[in-house]
Amino acid sequence: MTETAYQNLATPDSPLLHVRDASGVHTLTLNTPARFNVLGEAMLDALERALEQVRADEQARAVVLAASGKAFCAGHDLKEMRASPELTYYQQLFNRCSRFMLGLQKLPVPVIARVQGLATAAGCQLVAQCDLAVAADTAQFGVNGIDAGLFCATPSVPLVRNMAPKLAMEMLVTGGFISAAEARARGLVNRVVADDALDAEVQMLVDAILARPREAIQMGKQLFYSQREMGIEAAYQLAAQTMAVNMVHPVAQEGVLAFIEKRTPKWPA
View 1 (spheres, rainbow, N blue to C red):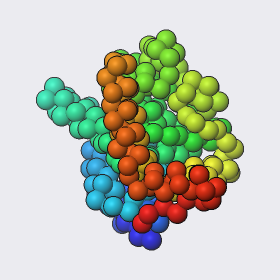
View 2 (cartoon, rainbow, N blue to C red):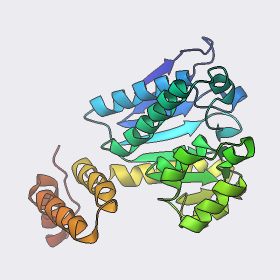
View 3 (tube, rainbow, N blue to C red):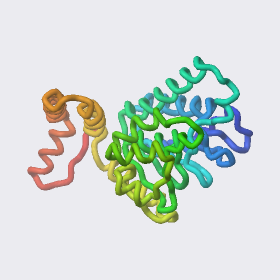
View 4 (tube, helix red, strand yellow):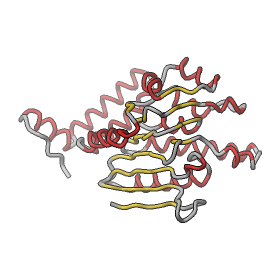
């Protein structure tokens, strides 16, 4: 097990981002609770470096994105943004954040959001961008930039890919918040549990992923997002090719043989 604490602008006794690797499970914990874990430039830098570590780790199996304090993430750092009122700066900032969000999708392993509190604006975007999400029943979700005169355009991209368009639009134009139960009903999160059961529920998902072959999950995740943006004929073509490649892989050969022989698969190392 390894653990890294990225300092950046944090104090030595309060790292900006905790990174923990245990048996291929990388847990990234946002750690600026007094500022509601905002996605300032320093936090984005720490997160980008953490993703580089995950991509370089051939033994990586999953990522858990967590946070400390009462908020999961309150979105962008508005004070930092207000200090540089220039179009070029804002373009660079939002493009950088978008690249980070896409980086989560492009990781070869599943990313699970562990949502213990408020997730708003780009924080809600972060939940929507993760592959899976588990929330405490006290968590709340919103894309309320409109309250400050700023339509949450970039958060709308993954949001509308998680829930029905009219439900997403209502949140975007009213700035209203939804409960964890409503977020689950709308498809934003997978599971909702009591606060004290959050870690156990996340671990159940992680264990389910660890029990399956990494290679098949990697191929499947790539296919899942690629085919979603295609027409149905192209999607079927890509899916068929993916399944064929997966089928000749040793993990599928072993898995099918184990099924036929009615035994537990012994996944190749």
